[in-house]
Amino acid sequence: MSKTELLDAVESKSLKKNLPHFEVGDTVDVSCRIKEGNKERVQIFSGVVISRKGRGINEYFTVRRIVDNEGVERIFPINSPNIIDVKAIRSGQRRKAKLYYLRQRTGKAVKLSQRHSEHTAVQSE
Image (cartoon, rainbow, N blue to C red; front, side, top):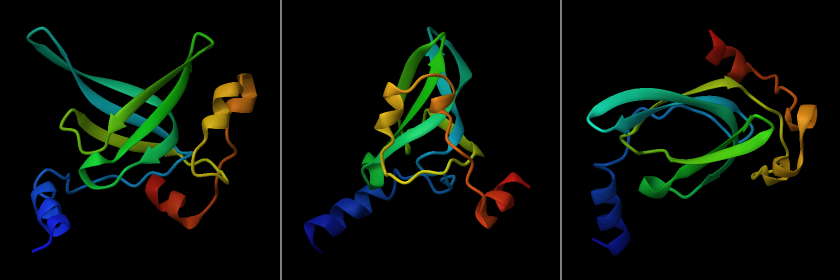
């Protein structure tokens, strides 16, 4: 057994089985578990996915939204136990793998045009 096969076998136990399908450019709602003292609650962070990086246990994605005319970005590990659910609300049309250029844009220029395909129609039903 090679080194990578051994690592993949160990990692596979920690991977989530039912990952939702979303891509860069999609508007998503990320439900994450927040611990405050001895209390737990679920908070929803909604925004546009501007990047996805890594693979396996190290895969994560960055979500950006605008709050009070200030850009807020948050990085979520996909396989984290604190991430309860990721729901794709709207799929955006894009031509790049990373949408870092959205950081310089303000107002309506931040909004991506909607992608129309059979895949998005099936998800919304």
